[in-house]
Length: 211
Image (cartoon, rainbow, N blue to C red):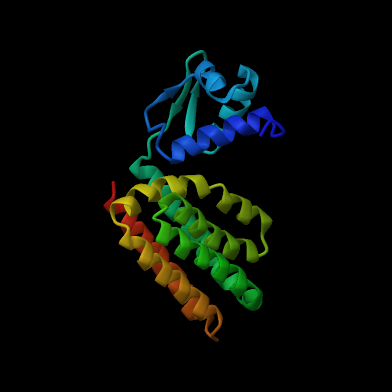
């Protein structure tokens, strides 16, 4: 642990606490408190908080600290719109490379099943996001892939409360992801794209229902 740069340790600590809701939306975090919690000086704390602000998880206030941003309805809509644009575009672009993609996606679904069995909502959603990141990444546009990956923490944070309340959503999600893999093994790009669109729409309904 000591070999990991101090700023990276602070970043990982605070991000995990926000995603686990140990630091809920609306809580003000001070540099001194975080420095003590992680066992570092204030300088790496500032570096970590700047990264967290770029990720949309906190808002920095000079001489006061960092406010953990609550998940607002508009943020949910913005993330959903970005997902739809990026993932539907990628769904068509990956078709020529679908055979190589199937194995990677199958591994992610196996992880989702394991996390479902363990009742670990956060890890389940991280595997879910990795599934979709693999599709967007396989489209071959590094700029779009980085943009999509920047949404990961927000998506996990938004999704955890809903599936903790309704764990059956994980079963529905696993089924949808397996259907996408099966479609990649078929001969219809239209079918695959339709499944991607339907899955995003279903996720949108779930998120809007947990506001």
